[in-house]
Length: 233
Image (tube, rainbow, N blue to C red; front, side, top):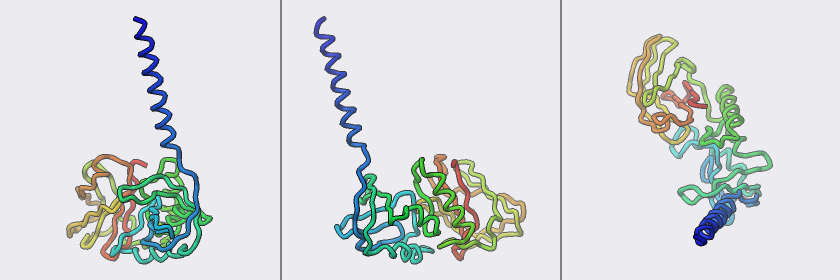
């Protein structure tokens, strides 16, 4: 019977050691400094050490997509500059996820100036990034240009479907595309949507199907924005 208290004590001690190791491994790294060697695109850069930084909370247009050149050129302004870095771990490609100050909070500034959309924003920063994006779109900053059909659609997400109601004159959807905050896109079929008509689209974008927090963006054939709709914010 005397062995049981010792056994329980050993279990408690093991649990305490394990929890301390876990806590120590999850303490955020301290801020560091680095010099920017080159910019890859609007949200990714390389330091002179060879380390690749992926800026958190944002997603800029990919190569060959509308807005790529403009977003990349904006970030190139910090090439050869020394920046302050708060590393927050690695992504699946081995890049360092980071907040960057120049001294402005660069991640947020990129969204404020309209060169990226918000993406996987950390809970404590949701409000500032959502407001920055809304202001950039409304004021047509950076890559954001309003379509002549801007705000002609009302959206509702009834997972896995997206319901769109036309509040303007008849709309032609040829060349339209829909995306979420990530790179996932859906190309519209060529449709005619009459005034007050509601259509149902099933874009097969997992984030909408699973009810995750996200934003739906719809663009016309010229790449101008027709609608942005915040979901579960």
